Length: 391
Image 1 (cartoon, rainbow, N blue to C red):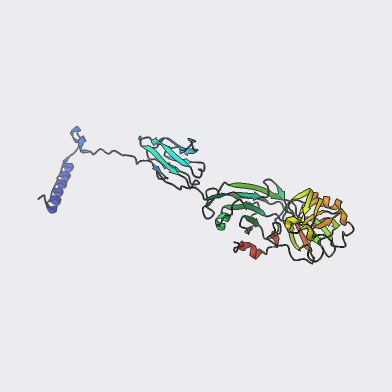
Image 2 (cartoon, rainbow, N blue to C red):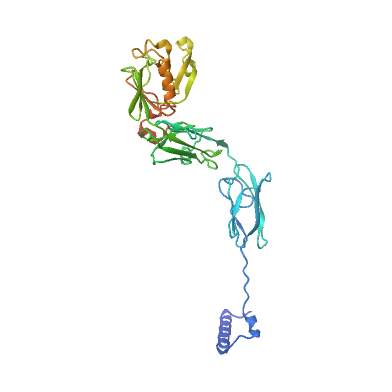
């Protein structure tokens, strides 16, 4: 059998001692014959490391693809199945490479290149395929100036089931750190507002960074969106049924007041509460059938002028020349706020989207907070809860 472990250790010890003696007795320069005693070391760079495994599937298109190379990258491209090259950047030292644009859904990408040692960089992978995609349409319009009651609006083209994920993907940034909260009106309609009216002059930027993010049940964002807008002067309108007058304040000062006629008491009494100015029309056909009142049940189809929208349920401030006899004295409408032609035209031109209209002292109830422009009627403690029981 071979040498025992004890004998091998003893031999190794003898050899080590001899080596020490030879070194200790050697004085002066190393001769040419001694050059071979120095071990030669060759450093081999590690092969390039790609962040995505070759053959991977279901890759998130939002995550950058990176390549790290100790030797340095000589050449490298990444293309999709159509041959289009993906934008990327190479570090100054040539050791790091990364894509700089989001990838597409359901695409196949191929990396091809080599490092400076000649090692190939080859990989192919496929990005994830969403079960459905949704877009986030933001409001108000980019660059607009709106009233102090205007909420940030987000309408999803396909309802996200993970509402927490949807909210986290949306940011609201203001020039004065205004605090606020989200509230779901329905499964596709999300609002954000402060607890009280905005401060005039506030600038607001809203970003929906939903691309590449799952918003529940395989639904992913189709693309990102962004808007910026400014809060204008505080134009607040108060409509008081006890005096049947409409009064407009600008930054706390009265600028106009005129008589009106509101929804007649009983079934058509105009609801109390805070409304928000929406669309404005020089001419509008009002059709009661759009909110469920048939013509044979007392409904109407009427052309009106100078119509300023206050609710999704069909309440407007509008011109009513047929009701001049009632202005300031009797309520006779189906819920709208009737005014003279001149006063209605003035109000349409003076007001802007997002201005609050506060209706008080009617015999009606309160405008439902789920009405698209009635969101200030949702109590704040309910608002910050976000409507968690929404189906």
